[in-house]
Structure formats: C-alpha cells, structure tokens
Amino acid sequence: NAGVTQTPKFRVLKTGQSMTLLCAQDMNHEYMYWYRQDPGMGLRLIHYSVGEGTTAKGEVPDGYNVSRLKKQNFLLGLESAAPSQTSVYFCASSYPIQRGGPDTQYFGPGTRLTVL
Amino acid sequence: ILNVEQSPQSLHVQEGDSTNFTCSFPSSNFYALHWYRWETAKSPEALFVMTLNGDEKKKGRISATLNTKEGYSYLYIKGSQPEDSATYLCAFRIWPSGTYKYIFGTGTRLKVLA
Image 1: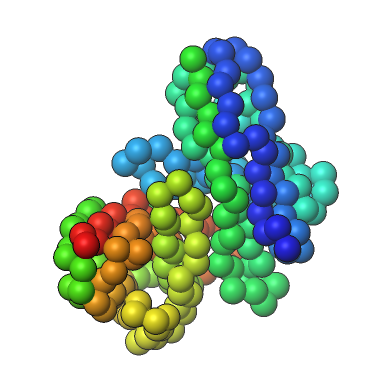
Image 2 (image 1 turned 120 degrees about the vertical axis):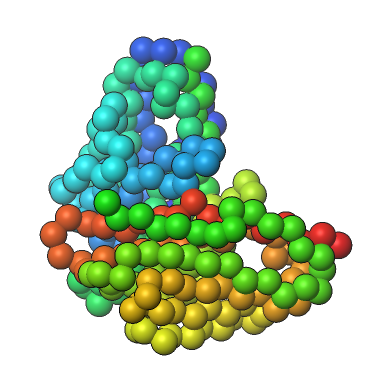
C-alpha cells in the first residue's frame, strides 16, 4: 500500500496564478483533510471531507477550494495564489470514530508551495 | 475557543537522559487524545490514541499517560537516543458530533545530543 500520496512535492507560483494539489489514499478511508503548516503555527485545517461528494470548511478555508469526486482523492485548489499562501500543505486521511475506526490520521509527505 | 497547548516548545537532552513533555487540552467534551511523532522533512506519524481517563500506552521506550478530568497528557521517553529527535504533536478530538473538531498543538521539538 502506498498510504497517502501528494503531488506535486514542490511548486513555485506567481501571485494570481492557479494550481491544484492532488491527494490520494489507498486505505479506503472515509475522511480526508487538507492542512497547512506555517512556522510557529502548527497544523491548521483548511478543508475536510467526510465522504465522497462532501466537503466542509476547516479553520482557515479562505482562498482555497476543494473537491472529493472519488473516495480515494481529495483535491485542493488555489484559484488566485497570494504570497500569504506560501506554506507546506499536508493531506491526511482517517477511518473515523463514527465508523468504528481509531480516528488516527495518516499523513502524506507534504507539498512545499512558494508564491512569489 | 478550543486550544491545545504543549510544553515545553523545545528542549535539548543528552543521549541516555529520560525526558517528558505535556499536552494540555480542554477537559469538556473529551473524546480522544492522539500523539504523533514528526521528524524533520517527513510527515507526522501516529504514536498513540488514548480515550479513557487513566489510560497508559507504551511503545518501546516511549510511553504516554492521560488525565481527562484535569485535561492533560504526558509523553515520556526513557533513555533518549539521537533517533528520537523529532517534534512531538498532540491532537485533541472532541465528542464526534456536529462540526468536526480535531485540534493539534504546536508541538514539542526534541533534540537528543549524542
């Protein structure tokens, strides 16, 4: 099993450009998440999904959109990148408590995004 | 406002020393407390999940305890080794109803000196 994978690993954008980050998991997990990690801030939840076709806002959703068209994939989009979105982005998935799972989150390797 | 605090923010210990750090969380609506280990340039990996007051978990030289009534968990490392150098994160899960709430602390960064 590959676990949780993210593409790309690195990306540099100019202000105003758009891009999509792809997260894929092969563990049949119901829940998926996108976090950003900034120095001194810890992991902050951007958006999450509790199942195929559903998404919800997390702590810092502004400037991002997400889609979960297939259970195994969770896409994070930046429509018009801003320098404040320079960060490391982590995707995670879990088998939730509500389904009898441990709720432990499994993380991807991260995507380092720089917006100039 | 739900807040998870970890202390200390960072510490350096000598190889062979034992150490411990704290995760403080709200004691109301508690459901689970998770500990993760996060090595530099990697992604967080799960260490423990604890749900019951008084829980104790152990994995090798690392162990954790949980006090849900007073809202804290301790992580202990016995006989620290350089490979234990990492950031240790805790995450607090409230009762799983309504809006999803899974809040990470900012971590304790441990450096073990050889």
